[in-house]
Image (cartoon, rainbow, N blue to C red; front, side, top):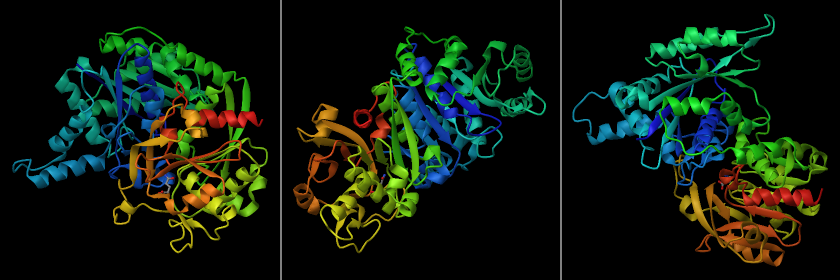
Length: 532
Ligand code: GLN
């Protein structure tokens, strides 16, 4: 039988529920258990695909093409569990499904209500990952206890425990223990209140993970244990770990969280191996070399907007035993001050995915700088499309070449809308999404990097390289090194006479892990180290 762990959050948001859920997944996997992870988000949007990166951060794309919360990226990076569309539900998607059922008449004349219909729908979603190949499902409940939007989810996890038996369910509450410098004290009251609210909802947490800046003394743990009605050894201290996120599972293991979960859920384990994880931390802390990469994008003040890109660069560094420093550059600053001012001295330049016209000219300038100065360049999705525009304008001499996303009347639409996209009117969930096969051409950097002919990568875009310009580009020194099997879509292009200039239409950052750096990120970092 599949067991369930529910992770709730208290006091404030942004405590790292996603990272903690992912870390719990990692520590259970290190004991030979098979885990799956999912997240419930309290907002009304069906998925985050239509939200701005300012609002929501990165949209993480799964193999099956779901546009999901970025926490799923943490799940995949920390564990071997693959995520899919059953790993992220929102209030919007739950209601949508219930309303569709109501329209079909599936409720047989009943009044449709939050309890039991919405809560039953949530419980069904929580059981979608159950199966003989899953020992534990970890479900993260977005938002914090006390939020209005959070309530149906709390009610659902309470009922869930009652239905499947309390011994098959574990409630873990992640909370903040603030330090008041004026009083020189850490405070437990907000946590007491938050656990109080959970108990009002009928949920007694089994384990409390305390995020804290300062060490939590035995006395304070005693107090928490007493007031929150949680065993003393189930109060786990989690000090801030920045900058090494991958340290979190080790901190939790150090305090015996793995043993505690195994014992409470009566899980049968098989082995105990964290050696791979330890060697990752060793490289992160004592790398043999270093490099500096510039990312030129639009949301550089928002860590979460390019979360998977930042992490994949770290993985590329791990693969080369190197520290990767990132220079974050707003593309509009390049438009104002020129590329050299911001890019001088970097050993690699990356332009990530994006939407809309703002900042595009700055990205194009950055790419020109990389091409002309032989600095390794890695273009991802929009980063490939901008490279096509740059090459068309400055090498092929196609004046005013552009993508029709930015200029519908361009005389040279080197990037244009996919035929199948022309009729699309709804914005949500309608892009070319998810895993698509790609065939690599022998003798290219792409082929050498992957070491195989057929690959599969995840996509999220509407626009595409315009095949009418292939011949001209090829004659001027561009190599088209990856295509969809029917050759309809260009998936990878690279420059002939350049140390490393590789552009991909897909998103390799969604498939990189610290334990298995994506080959393209690894090679990009290697190329940047070669010019150091
Ligand atoms: N805006 C471009 C498109 O829709 C690129 C998308 C992206 O970078 N993810 O094709």
